[in-house]
Length: 488
Image 1 (cartoon, rainbow, N blue to C red):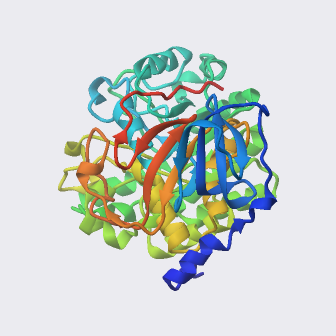
Image 2: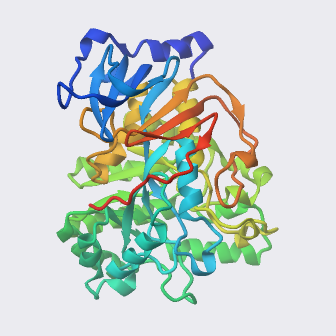
């Protein structure tokens, strides 16, 4: 399936052809006499009903009006020539604070600064790699304390499902404390020598955890890999002297994703638990989700930007900075993921931002390197370039993928779309404005990423969170952190 756009004129028309005429949407205000805090004028605004050249008014952090000729505001921002999109909701980000022995990996200050610079206004934070991992009400409180006054964007939280908390009441405890969803690993994770670290579930913990999570009504996100098979294939390859990233990929074939996805879906049928399959790297995995949804199972899935951008044949040249789990697969798999993203069967494309110090990546043997990619800063610009500018995705579908779909699935009702009454969270995108990413551009604590050195064909030029500008291209990230933890 070829989604490529043949020339620049056609790419321009992808945007122009989706514009709704001004008379198709009327001004809708919260209060008729409101004096707005901010008005955004002249941008191409992606609303839930389509794209429209219009103005947006903000009052008290909320979208107060959408329509032409809005002017009565303390601050006027001219967005001429820019795409005004809802801010991205990335539902797969790792921050390592509190960190313990991992304190140098990624903190709230640097991680959320990268989000602000990249147009991510909200993310759902994974319950690992913090120490202690988030697996109880008490550890959730420690995480909130660690992030106090450090957030540049809004942060919702995953609770953890691990073998050691299914008999302790900790699932309900975390639900009561406000987590948006839960997360478990079917693949190997964590360090058993570190007290309080995360751990992957066995079948009993997965089934019993699903039973308990179903009672809370919340979603369980699942890292689906067959741990015994991938662990043994990796050991055998290393024993044979294999060292390359491509050889690492070969030890995690697609069936090691598909089998645990099937198992998770079967358990979900038995327990009534709503589930979401994380970072699907093969189209066969998506097809299991499609089949289950057709049978009435409440299951969705995501993919990652790096699976849509890189392919296996590039990895040995890039090196271990591109090692991740599940691994980056071949062009055929990538084409299948793009197809399912366009069709809506993949609901969102996330960063799976999983940073670490460079020393943990700088290994001669790929099997010894940390498996994770730093990418949250380039969620929006690269996806816009690859999906909209190169493959012809509509702006409305782009906004659904980065914002509306994940906000709805993860129960974030004030986020996800440019709609009156929602939080005034926006990312301004300048199309057809190529730049080359440099390590110095990164806000991460550890300034490396497989995207460094790549030319990106669009730029994030402003990010707004709840009506306050938190990043501009000329001034950088705002000094004052104004983000909040979201409790559900």
